Picture 1 (spheres, one colour):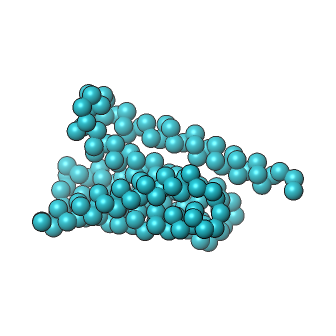
Picture 2 (picture 1 turned 60 degrees about the vertical axis):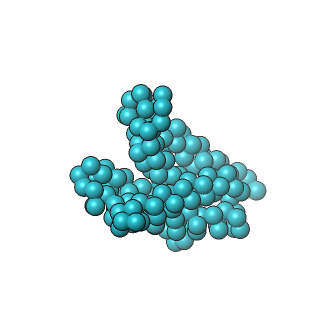
Length: 157
């Protein structure tokens, strides 16, 4: 196996784990326990996705340059959400939700952009769709989660 092949395999494996545990985190009850464990696994696997994306994109620059920037932006969101939970600044729950879901949108976008050219029927659709669809679907989800948190906080006990 080549060095590039190693990092690509690592990237695919950690990205797959990220997609799976990210979905589990989104669907799990927001409390200590399963959600916290899943969040730690998500962040850890995202670190590996980030580093392997940086390495592989540098190895195949300029054709994979876009992955470098997607990795920087997406992991930035993951780190923002992760640190919001760890440091708990004012309005940390909204920051955590926005960062973590934003990072999930980022990894989903990357998976779609890279893989849809190889899928029959879907490969005939405009690539622009796969760049914007996750954000168009995910942004209202982030807004809804944040509204739910805000309503919960303002509800009388």
